[in-house]
Amino acid sequence: MAPLHRIRIAVLALAGVTVFGTVGYLLLGFTLLEASYQTVTTVATVGYREVRPLSPVGQVFTMVLIVVGVGTVLYNLGVILEAVTEGHLRRTLEERRMNKEIGALRGHVIVCGYGRVGRSAADFLRSTGEQVVVADNDPERFADLDPAVPRVLGDVTRDEVLLAAGLATARAVVVCLESDADTVYTTLSARALRPDVVIVARARTTGSKAKLELAGANRAVNPQRIGGRRLAAFALQPDVAEFLDVVMHEDSLDWRIQQVPVAAGSALAGRTVGECRERTGVLPLAVRRSPGAGLEANPSADAVLPSGAVLIVMGTQAELAALCALVTGAVLE
View 1 (tube, rainbow, N blue to C red):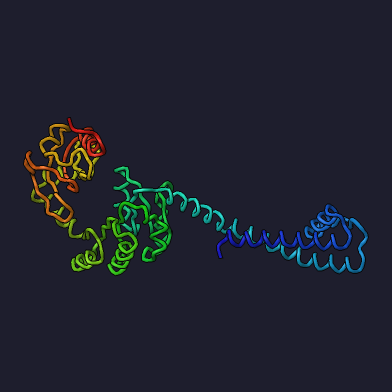
View 2: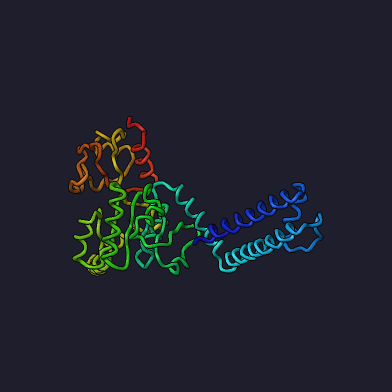
């Protein structure tokens, strides 16, 4: 039973005993104030004199009230001391505060599993300014997590834990659990609850990648395979690998690679790649004309951007900001 629920029951029991005693003394001929005073002093075992002389019936009633009232008070004391000394109350209040904070989030990213891969993903997401909610069933993994980061303690294979992490309003879900079976199950659950959410899953083995995509993951990533390829890239083409590393992950360079969706009604819809570059100064690298279509690298300046396309560009922070401003409503002149 939750600590706050136990405290609530204890307080209601004490209130019930107080009402019981007050009504009993009223029936014995006491006034309301006298009945309330007699009940409180009796239950609290203060030991003051009776307000009025008690008849045999009143004495029996008082004995019953002492037994019931003292037992209730001791129960209240035990519940409160347990909640305070064992930290139950503090954890419950923190959990409520966290749930309220998560409920207010919109467009955040849920990281399922806070192991080495999950920690790395969460750190990178936060470094780019994204709002992150971390979910894991091991409380010890939260020891080094920034207190400002919302977290949910529980098994992410369960629907209620995903919903508690704000799946209904999340932008994406990153699943990086210890076993492929749990990752597949969590991916299935997330896809069933939110058919439109972006799901990126960690594949521990090469064979599980196809299964994760069948389960509903938009992308399945094998960190070991990517790590091996990066090692080989640094060995064969170190300058190319370093450049890609810098523009994707480092803050020391002003240049960035970013994807920009061309939504319906956007100022870019129906315009050419060349117009986009002339207006903002960004360098178009590739374009995906529609969901599911292949990427067209190095698009020509005459290529038209239809609604629903995704444009991948490279530019400075100022150039990317100008491009985003166009996408969100500015009009090309």
